[in-house]
Length: 102
Image (cartoon, rainbow, N blue to C red; front, side, top):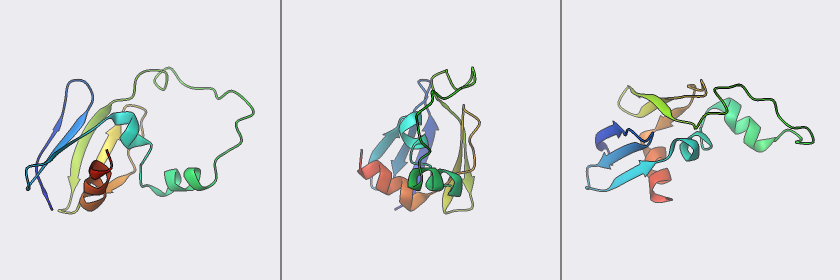
């Protein structure tokens, strides 16, 4: 199943319309938490202790948005988030699975 259209909405959502007519709309923070990159996968497997309050930057204190979505070949998209993270490669099949789980 392949996308027929993608869009970034003004409210920070990322929408994909699929060739079967379904549309999946992703919130930036929800999609960011599911980033498939090696660093994020490692953090999910081995979370750091949270006995101290984390120090965050001013940009991290702002609502998370998606700044850009670029195709990577014909099999995936790279997504750049407002927190500076942009190393996740979201395969089309993974986005479809994530959309089905919404």
